[in-house]
Image (tube, rainbow, N blue to C red; front, top):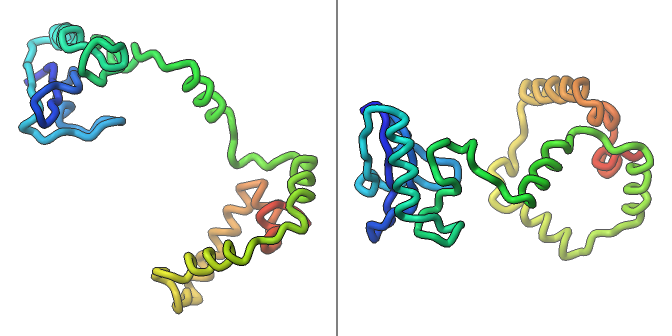
Length: 186
């Protein structure tokens, strides 16, 4: 079997996804959906990839797409081109762009760090919050009552120091404890 079009079926026998593949593609996990059992997968073999794409386009057109309100398939494209033809909503593109541009390891500029520090000064945690945290940390903790060996502590220390050297944020808080370490304050 070289190329094929495939349908994934619901328990009631109606198709919910159409794809084109070769090898084990029809039986592999896909990004946003779980693979159905093998008895709910229909495969239609083709001699060429072009024929398999044509069959995929036909099946998607025949059964229709849910997102367009034309049918029962969850496909996001009309098929025939792979994911390259998928058009994402503007809101998703903006969100994804901002997420890719953000650098979570980049430290805040000094003026932002100072503003955060000032805002958090004098803040007290409620007794109920502290109790819930304490309970969460002690209940079902597999390491409770145990200690790392000296060798393990030495290895952890070396790895931590190496991370601090590579990461400017970690280097700026090295040797600080508690809130000072978390927020980069003195």
